[in-house]
Length: 247
Ligand code: BTN
Image: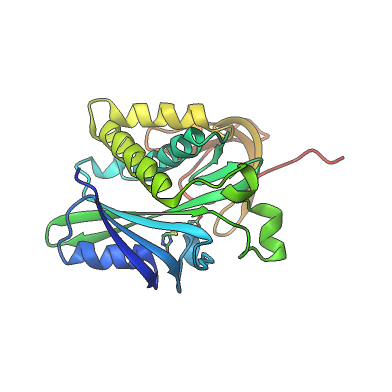
């Protein structure tokens, strides 16, 4: 994959721009970056607050040659790449299923993968937001979010962060597409996530909330939850929250 960086000063959303470029025929490896986003998007249609230079706002166009049932693993491979990236700057991150990267239990990065049909076949856009400074955190957000400035003595240079991130994305993506890749990504992800098994969680689904203990991932990346009655529930999508013992 050949990495090409396209830098913007301001844009609606780097994911939206990457989707537009993919539909126009962009090559795999095109990366859209912007200093700010006016309509930054999170999962489930949430807003991703994206003030100027307060975060890294990054999206990459991929044209994966993997089986359709392995597509959800793209999100996990991106989580692994972000985890490696932060770790190489001296941070000890965690990954909360499916794709929240945490430091000290607070979210430092989010990933939004979206697909689109194009004349050249299916394209997957992987959008990554990494919090750099906390200037744009509302009081609510400050309880649950953190940023590089708060967890490192010196904030990494933006260009260094981009270089390491793109390199790690290339490595993880190659791994996913290689022989035995899906199982390797699951293994890598599992090693990097304290949420993969034995964690008491509550999962917020569309119509209900279920509680249980995490019990590993399925081959396609879905999360297994062991209920109190011993039944295993397989979660394809939803928000996972850690359940803390009452004190
Ligand atoms: C989430 O955790 O809900 C996912 C957040 C993803 C945010 C990034 S920032 C770059 C890219 N452009 C967007 O509009 N969203 C993603």
